[in-house]
Amino acid sequence: SAAAGLFVYPNKGPVAANYGLEDCRFIKPLYHNDTIYVRLTCKEKVDTDTRGRQLPSGIVKWYVEVFDEHDELSAIATVLTLVQKKSPFKELSRAYIASALAKLREDTRPEWGMMTPQHMLEHLEWTLKMATGEIAVKEIVTPEAHLEKMQESLYNYNPIPRAYQHPLLKKGKLEDPVHGSLDEAKQALLDAYAGFLLFFEENPKAVTRHAIFGAMDKSLWKLLHRKHFNHHFEQFGIL
Image (tube, rainbow, N blue to C red; front, side, top):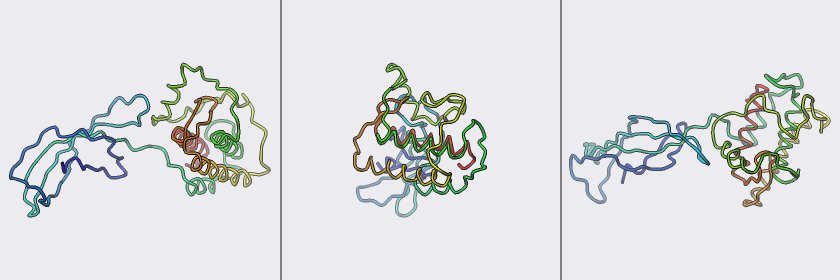
């Protein structure tokens, strides 16, 4: 049972599920209320074929050594666990977004695409307001038969393709600017992010619509925003 309390350091990812003991051998008796210490050594890692609404993970085989209070080896075992892989994406927070925006200037050039810094910020703000319903989505362009697969794609760690063309945006030209300056756009994005957090704090079960991904709850929106912000912050070298 001590081996069932396996943990993984945060930089490795949390244990998503415990697969239990593969084998166990006692060298000396252990009794109820004995004080024991457990040492874990990773023996093998195997990637799993993650599908559906699951975050990427892998099976880890651990070699377990159990010591008594006198530091004498009392048992050895092998335990299998399903471990969630560390996300390659930066986690969103107001502090992180603000620090990234501080690096963005009027003359910052994108690594791909035709957006200006201000257009990029206004695009992210637009998506945040879509999540809260402030910007209503009248039409979902993805066929209903494909919506489930589109939403499942939010769980994987694949980045958004660089050449992706959003179906609701103008093709081959930029949208008209919304704000008067880059600084105004920065503040508007921070305000929209705060509004997104507040909306789902007050309406935790709310479901709003995205033009591509369809009906989205809080967890799906968070996955989308994480990918989306990482995509555009990388585009402008402020990730």
